[in-house]
Image (cartoon, rainbow, N blue to C red):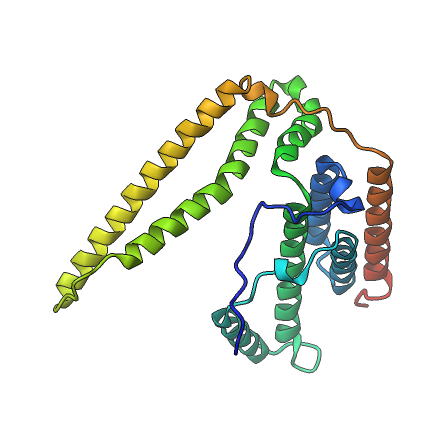
Length: 264
């Protein structure tokens, strides 16, 4: 008997208390941004492997259970196989497998970047994101850039995203439970699909506006949007140690990439 597929859970931290959970949100965002820039300029196997080790080590320290990882749908496996076969047909060095190796490297790079984003989502409270963005963006205030407004907008979007996903799932389940007549012609099927799409979009917009109104009332009752980006969190010793480990591993990977694995 096969188990139920595990759904994708976004922006909801895994319960627990670990070194990774206690890191400042700004440190995590800075590390993710720096690693993303590094992989943009040095997308080699050494750097991908180093980042993968960092992600796995952070997941072990944070005690992330296997159940938090979503199941991979079958159609995605089929798509990867088709993409690998197509890339292998393009040939290239070495030994005619250059296309396949390039496809595997791009796939590994995508998985690593998804793992980085997932680690931030699993170990960071959404309420900590806005203050961290406001603190990191302080130098930009000299240029009269509204960092606080951007941080508040980001915080509200992150808080509303999981809530709206749940609402849309309920709407979709309710639509599937509605009795439907089976159309006889293709034209009737197109009209029925169009009516159902319009009804679903209208219901989704109504739910979104209602949720936005409720969130606005809650923010007003708690003192306005200024309270969202006013948390006093700052980096500590653990953040410096984590940043040093990331810089050391990524620097070593780049050195290996430019010396040992460099093509003559």
